[in-house]
Length: 310
Length: 275
Image (cartoon, rainbow over all chains, first blue to last red; front, side):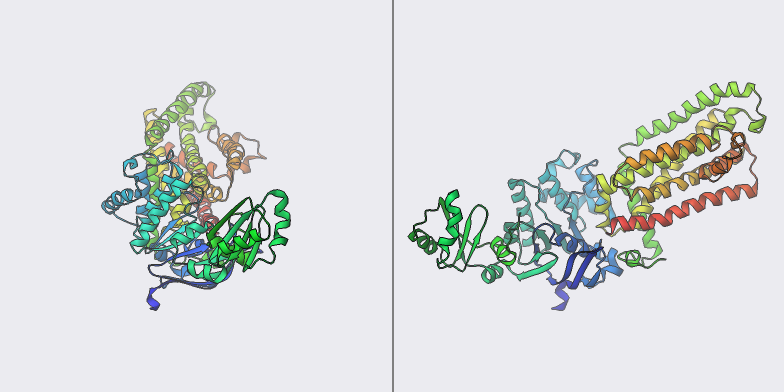
């Protein structure tokens, strides 16, 4: 149903002087979806998010959000969006509760409504016992969770998350993922950017791979892996002197593709164990070998020849 | 209104009533923020006029009065100085409320970036902050007038009109300074603004002595500063010497400077926050 398309972009472009940050991208987002922009730093993800957030006018192309035009209806659209920016923008001089109060007031919410929602949201992000504390000394993970709570104070129809776990330690990241997963279960429409393939793979129903301002591929994580990679990947590490000659010796192993990285060699195959047997049969003795399933990292590598997190 | 890609983009066409509501929402943020510091700020807004009027008005004033006060218009030095300090104090309040808080909001705390993700627009943040600055100017100038009355430095019931005059003087600084502060990346330029802007104005715009005492060649420089107009207006009101046309002239000059600041601030806020 056309009504359920919340965001539609056609030829969306953002230029800063001579530099084109977003280069004519098309995408559509439906209600209830978790939609991701996956790509390395500088791919144009944040610029796209700022345009969707109606705080950055597109240079050209069409953008419709909730059936409205950001150029005309910015305030009305933003009233229905929640935003978790890449950098923390909490007021660290205020308390946890005051941050939600101030933000709820920006949306014109009544004090009692804000107080009710604050209690629920602080429970949800596991910060209830810090409600009266100043924000400054909170850990990075707590601040990010508070930012998520803040973005939900207006009960938005679409939640925009720009690199929601960048800069967090692994444990804090898992807590954030868990919360986002719960939001997804509740049917909240999420748009997120990430340069972590595991984040995108776990959370996104559908995603686009962005590189250099363009969309390199689009689909569900599973579709993308099926289309751009093999079911399995064999990772090989060799001793330093063997690593140089290994690619030549591996050239005739039955594999869809071989990627030679600085520290290891990746063989893309339908059956990793079979490929490993073939490697061994050529008299090669890898120092370590690992058979794993393909991930979005492999998709990105196959599409661009580069790794995501470099 | 200008309609470039930056001018119209994302901010166009809200009804005026809605715009006022948005500006007030931002004002409320500053009020929540102010709850942490209001006590200290009240102490200093009382203490500072007491110290200045005591030391300079009474102490230095005694010396000045002995040499005759003809060039002061025949009033005591205290009565001459106090309205000057009222206007100059408004300038300093404006500087304090406008420069660092704006840079902090856009650069250090990034609370402006958080606010523009809500329905509020850059122009609402600008107006909301101007409203808060206005409130602080009313508070500080009001306290100053009360202290002045305590020192017996008020000579006319017209002094009540020096409150809006002082607030207007402050706004003639607050609006342009906010418009400028939002364009900055570092606070270094504020130190320059203090050293080469605020302090020379404080010293040479007629606060401490009549501009007529300056060499004729540099007098016109004093006349074009907003502070001189603010001092002249406030002084004529607290001394009861105000005349209609000069008063309107001073007020219009201050209004014009504030209006230019508001116009430019609309542009610079949008340019900075809607990149």
